[in-house]
Length: 182
Image (cartoon, rainbow, N blue to C red; front, side, top):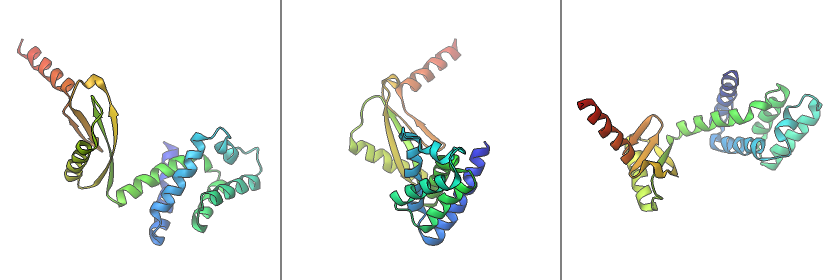
């Protein structure tokens, strides 16, 4: 909980700076790439930036090299250095998530998912995406999943909106209505 509040504060500050310079999407992308380093490397990037056993100047140099490798501008480099100075580099992935949410909201982008019993072809996915965009009023970015347990139909989720047209749900509803009549 505490990390989320801190991450949101840092993300809001970076978002404001990005808004001033027209670079919110760029900052979000750079921060996302660095956050991926925390998860995908066995080299212990997160540990190298957070471990108090390493002197502050060593951690700052490591972050400077990372910033250089992702071609971060001066503002982003200063932001990353601030995280090291304030001993907040451990929440960098959370800041990246919060910043992405803010950028998506600013650009009217929603993320959703489609669950189907079988793989859907691209034309059907495009129609579903267009319908969801019309319903939400936002651009929708979809992830697809295949789950044979829903038997047929699809389940579409975008934010709080859930459209469940699966046969499994319909069968469960029919089962409940038959039980209710007995």
